[in-house]
Every structure is written in C-alpha cells, then in structure tokens.
Length: 401
Image 1 (cartoon, one colour):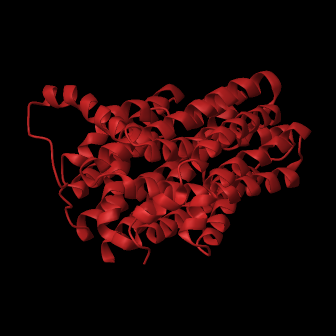
Image 2: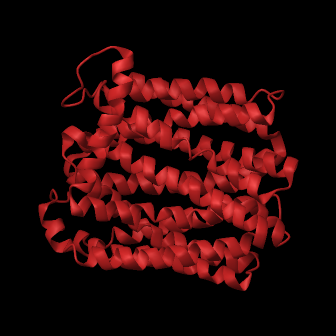
C-alpha cells in the first residue's frame, strides 16, 4: 500500500514539527507573561480556529482532488510558520499567524481522512491503528524533546524546523500520491457563491452525522477529549506549581500520548467486537485518573495518572475508524470535517476554560475539575452506547483483514 505509506510519512513529519512548535510557543508566552491563563490560551489558539476553518473550508475535500488540497494546505502552513520563526515578530502578530496556520488544518485533515479508506479498504482500522500509534509516538517524541530543544536552540529555531516539516510533507504528497478525485464534486461556481454554499456543505455533514444515531453516539464519545486535553494545556504552569522545569515539562506532555500508544497496541490484540463493547468503559476510564489531581500530586504520581488516562484514550482509534466506515463515501469529507471541527474546537475551549480556572484555583485543581466533569459526561455517553448494540454495528462493517 504505497499510497498509505506516503500519507503516513507526511503525517509523521508535520505532527512531530507541530508539537515542537506548540511547546515553543507555550513556553515563550508563559516566560513573558507568567500567566497560566495566557499560556493555556496560546495552546488553545492552535485549536479554536477550527470552528471557522471547519465550517468554511472542509468542503474543499469533496470539491477538489484530495492530493491537491493537502499539498496546498501544507505549502500555506509552511510559509506562515516560516514567518513566525522570524525573531522580531511580536506576540500579537504570532497569534494572528498561528490562527492562519490553523485555518488550513481543517481541509487538510478532511482530505486526508477521506483518502485513507480508499487506500486501505479492509485494512482500514489496522491502518488507523498504525497511524494513531505513530502519531502518538510523534507526540511523545515532540513533547519530550520540545522543551529541551527550545531551551537549547530557542523557540524561533523550533518554529523554523516546523516550517520545514510542512514543506517536505507537501513535496512528498505531490510526488508520490495519486490525485484522488472525490466520487462526487460540487459544481463550479463563482467564488462568492462557493463561500455561501460552504455552510450548506457543512450542514450536510452535520445532517449525515446526526441523522444516524450510531454516528451521533460515536461523535459524542470522540468529543469527550475536550475534558482530557486540559492537562496538556496546563502542563507548563502545573510544572511550575510542583517545582519542576526544563525537560520535565516535555515529560509531562508526553505521558498521556505514551499511554495511548500502549493502549492502541493492546486493543489490537482483541477482536473488533470486544473493542466496540469496551468503548464506553474506556471512555470513562480516560477521565477517571484525572480525579487524582484533587490530591495535588507531585511529579511521579502525576505522570502515572496521565499515563493511565492515555492508556484508556486508545478507544478513540476504534471509535474514529468505526465512524469513518459507517459514513457514506460521498459525504465522508464533509462529515469528517464537521467531526474534527467539533473535536478540535472543543479541545481548545476546554483548555481556555481550564486556564481561566487555573488562574483562580491553581493548575492541579483545574485539571481535577476537568476530570470530574469528563467522567460524568462519559458515564452518560457509555450508557447510550450500551444501547446501540455494538454487535450489530460490527456486523455491518467491512471484514477485518
């Protein structure tokens, strides 16, 4: 499956670079302001623009050849991040550039997600597991090394490295991936008309999701990540709260994705029917470890709690793969764009609210509160999922290879 390998390598490059840039910006803002709220807001700023980009731009994955969409998005992001790497750029302009970078993420992700089922066929969930594991490994490596790299070479050099990863990804996709024209495309029209109709395309994705109770429930389970991402957004101020710095910030950021890698590998050892049955329980288990933050953990207990949360979060691989396989191919790009828009924007909102709460109560308390809310919502989602007959859903999915 050479096409999948191309998409996989391109994703590895950009994901690793992104985490390096995210750590650089978060540390830079916290150093200049000393504020948990501003630090969390900067982290969230890499997520919240998905509200706009998902609504206006995800439909491009169903309108133009998907390779072209991915290549153009990568080149746009490479140029913008290169500007961010210029040392004289002030923080307000960095924030504007970061928003523009994230506006290009939604059509890229929608096109990438729509291409993968075509490339993998019956190997789709296995391919998703490979991609998820490697992405999480990139998160682990990027977070663990990020703080050390920023300390060693500075945040602007870290941003320059990120720009290079986008450029290499674009070149690789252009040279080695087929065009992948969508099965049905929107008729050509004037630019103004396309922008007006983009909202109808997003609405079409929402209708496709909420018109199917199975898809709606899977979406609910996926969006629970808005609670469990809070420790990630508050890693820098939490590290200061417990008296650690430097490379330990990266270790705190890497603990959850490290757990997700192990969890994804373990889930592949059981049948798909078992994985589907376990979705609700694992969704609850992702939030429950964060309740330990009510006790004000030191470094080692905090790492254990984060690893446990990540271990259970591996259910997202099965939930996401099942969602994609159940969506009709002609609306897959729009449905994925809608789902990812909600997920990313929800995570950004969760981090912003967590940062505001941390400003008032401290980072550990804010993380514990997010875990408590997440556990309660996950209980409700798990109850709904148990009535959706996972065995029946398993029967209508393509056979595993």
